[in-house]
Image (cartoon, rainbow, N blue to C red):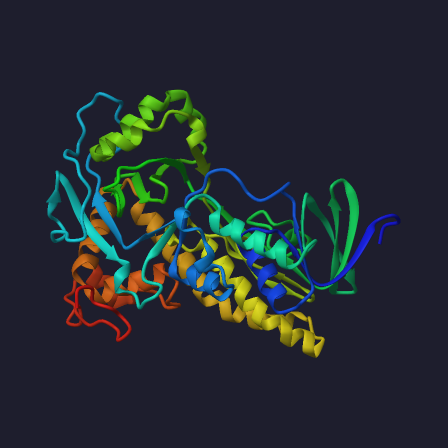
Length: 465
């Protein structure tokens, strides 16, 4: 320990107060376990990010006593997610003024025609209905930026005053032999030494804790990122929509307070060029994909209404060491196509929170004692990462054959209740099994009939019955 450093003793020290670290800190505080959370940012997160709470994330917040406490004016339940085919050779790439490939306007209601039909000139491929999930977690919840995260942080600070330190930068691990026994950090410019039974690395895809543990990992940066915007929405926009085409994805989520999130796939590193092209060009690209966005895109008047989200995948070879654990993106960042990145960090936190009391009782913080956490969590994470990469291959493609297969699968999912529900359950975080086996893939692509297409599990709800 360095002379003059503030010295703190605790049971668990968490490096990072993101989605996983904040949840773990609060879950442990509710169990009466001494915990200190170190966050390098100067305060709670700000800025723009589109946030969807999937059903498994809602369950976590419910267990923490926070789901019902989220401000009603900041959350928007969404039942239906519609997927459409975006036509044209390079959708979204045409300059303003060229004739749009798609025509028409209006928002789709809860009753939709069969896949392959056209609505106002747009071909609907598939509709995903969260109402088929067992209640009460049978909606996706779209929140205004950082609403759920702020609620978790506020509750943590209220429950454990001083248990969350902003402006704290991790510098190194403390060890006794092979055992990790704490961390050294800088807090508001002064040295801080924290002795702990367990160190948790919740510090993101570029984790410094993972680096200090010398855990091998693979980082893959995707060729595409996302431009996100929060704009005004018309009152009739009540459902989410995705347009997918050749190297094109444009999605809209209705949010609370008369707002909507737009997310638009762009080449990685291209944000500077998009800004140089100007807002009018961007608005035109969006309208060429979905002309019904006219009112919404006109509310884009400043780049401050937008943000850029890069995409990457992390696969750490192991998540535990003697006296240390990785959670969330530090262990397993994934492509946002899985719709589960933040949710999986929250699930990590809750699983680890259930294991820690047993480790304390036995006084065993070895990697072998902590491995139960990784064994429990890794199968679902590995499945989701693989599924997301398959979606990147087909959804982001510019290859017309892959796009054709993608559209065939979407159309099948719209007709095939069994396969559609399995994909929904995985997206919602309620299933740990991959949605498709080998035969399922052939059925989804339309190469084999599915004699069980109308067979749903007993927990599924058929809306309208």
